[in-house]
Length: 270
Image 1 (cartoon, rainbow, N blue to C red):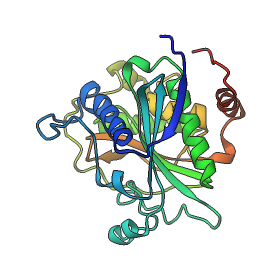
Image 2: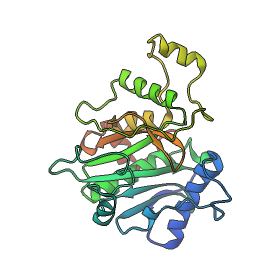
Image 3: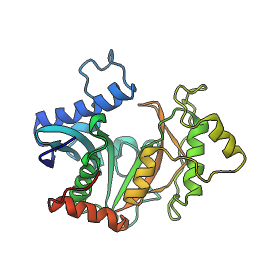
């Protein structure tokens, strides 16, 4: 797929915020089937966090077409007070972040990272990461707290992903937080991630070579993410996620070089 011009911007108009909500629906509702059209007839994925003045929506455009988006949440005292938390992030009711916060840290929570399916094998994802980095740096962010989709509603497979991440040395040596027991997870999975053969290998302790789901693998490889908790069951999308932290000062140099190349108009191979 060719493209004459890539650009990113922070949404400032209702039309741009609507573009972000439509992309999110196309990915979560249309492609992944995680949302019900009867309960979301507008085909837009929207939550109460989207309208806060501490929320930033980032969009990537290929020419004039919006093709990718993400949401950055910044600390919100009103939400924190309502939740009984510390920073007021979407993740915080399920993950106690008080043990993560340290003097000098400035946190943001990236979420709803979406690239339209037909644009996955282009520069869109790299532009989205570069935009997230640039806007976060502009706002003084030092760390991202997020949770990566494990592509399954199976507790067994989610825990196996955690073991695979540990085997790859991807658990944070510094931070660890607790998550609630996933009592609302289905007893019988509708979307397993691992094959029976892969589970059998894991039972024998043969974790080398086992797959890590796409999102946590991408966060770890491209952004230096480290995982800080066992899998968390997301009751909104009904899937498991893996909480993580990313120190912006520790993002790999080759990734930063890619971001710099985009800023300077260099086309990257995809």
